[in-house]
Image (cartoon, rainbow, N blue to C red; front, side, top):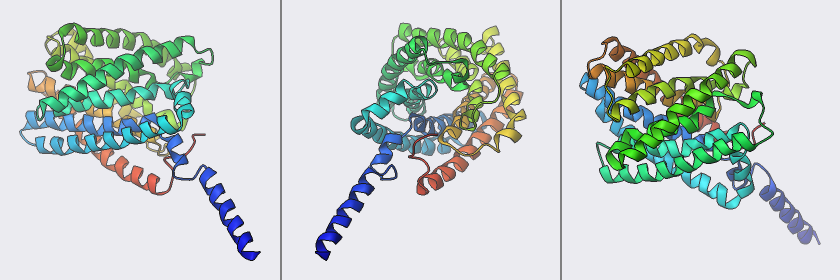
Length: 341
């Protein structure tokens, strides 16, 4: 009788453990699409170090190491997210249609497009594979996210945040490696969609920031995303045949510098924001700005861009290292794979 009671208790405890939100398997339901921003940030920093190596004559090896680390991160995150979709499709669908979190889904495609840039000088075939997969996913996600924003009656002004630029920025990233892998018309398609919708969303996002009050702490790091569109647009414009001497490129670089200054002015407040996966939103924009400024300086633009770019790549690298440590600590504490409040 005692043995039966013990066995029943064991089965009951086992059942509670399996159904508990803290169970490792259940944690898959809470793998956020925003985790792809880790691969974006590390990959973007790898590209920035490659550009730093061209501008200063050293540091390219750091870019190579970071590129492979970013690929490993992408594989791990993609594997976890695919497992989430397979085991908890409702949780994935809820994220894809969420008024706030849906914008982060595009980070999956952008991570592949960024790594396509990083591997272009090292492995052309791998770069091409990453680009075509990322470009196809980016095209689909852009349409679905835009459709959701238009059709979802739940979306209010308070749901708008800088991460809404993520699906747009992905289109601007595509031509950077796409000029080596795809027809010109396809690259101009991505650039056109990205440029027009970035400029269209800009007043919407700025109005939200100016008049709707502070964003929730978890979204505060997305303020850094404002740096990314002009940085990537400038790089894409030149890759598509423009020049750093063009008025458009000069205007975009000026906006990049302004956005970096604006972000730096908020550093004291932003550093007090609690850690979350969204904190990785700082890294890719800084790396993109560094790449744009370093490439422009190396092509003959104002030499001051070279030094601002060096500061930006240093800041991105410090953030990547610090956030990597903080992410590992959060994972060990079970803080990463849990429902958001």
